Image (cartoon, helix red, strand yellow):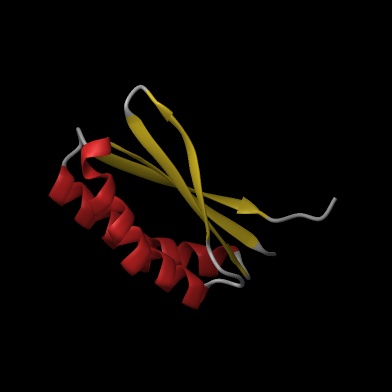
Length: 101
């Protein structure tokens, strides 16, 4: 079953350049190499001084999406969290089944 890994990022405008660079240089290339199609990057409207982005990548199976999440995504997110702190950065991932209607 095809699976979409959606990761939402929330961060302070002051660290936007660092977060976006990490996504552009590390996360997106890895997602593009591992996924079924290129990652889609989405900017959501800012909310009370918080920048909100999402990166979505389709995978062939839940196991592949979960493997990417644990082996690639979590270490990148942990690096950003340790560098920027809880007051400036957070993210979470959701696995979703891709269905045909």
